[in-house]
Figure 1 (tube, rainbow, N blue to C red):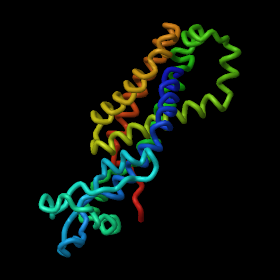
Figure 2 (tube, rainbow, N blue to C red):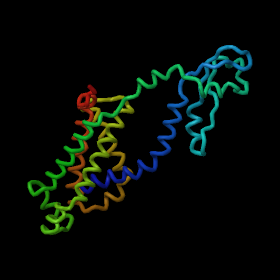
Figure 3 (cartoon, rainbow, N blue to C red):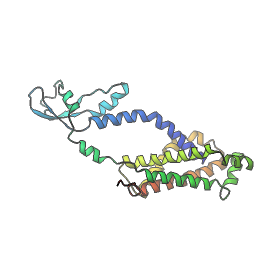
Figure 4 (cartoon, rainbow, N blue to C red):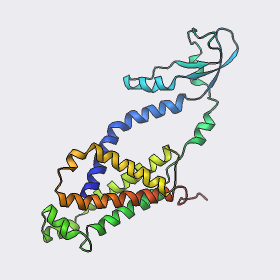
Length: 243
């Protein structure tokens, strides 16, 4: 379980580093994507323009978004215009707004919660005296009395549950953005997420004692497959329906 917690905690750090820029870029994309109706200031005829979303999202890193047009129905004849219609385009309602909204896939929370609980419970069994507790104690270097005291502490259980929940939401997010569902797709996305975190933190993980690494790697594989199968298999099936 240490290995799995290490992987997920590393994922938390990476997520916080990348979250704010990613949310800013996503907000810019949602706000300015789609063709927009305007009246050309030069010939006073209707036109449809597109805002350069990629440039706006990239420029947000330096502060406010730098807006410019990427396409217009009056181009290429008037491609050298001063883009005076940009203010109209910003406030105009895009034609594809409805398509953008319906194209998004949401995250269903019940499969995520169930997957996190199952992974946490499997971890409890995996490290219990019924399975690998004796080998785990020897690898970690703890006595029976220390382990009994550790079992009654609340913080290790909370950290493990939070790690499982975060990983399950990561799998659900990958499925949502890739528009995929199903057991195999869930296991695939879960495996990719685990592999990505493992690859970026391999230096620290490789320093673990061999016996401890084998125990924790076995649990990490089992938890990864379990959560992927549940989140992907129950996607849009286990939901709370409004009355």
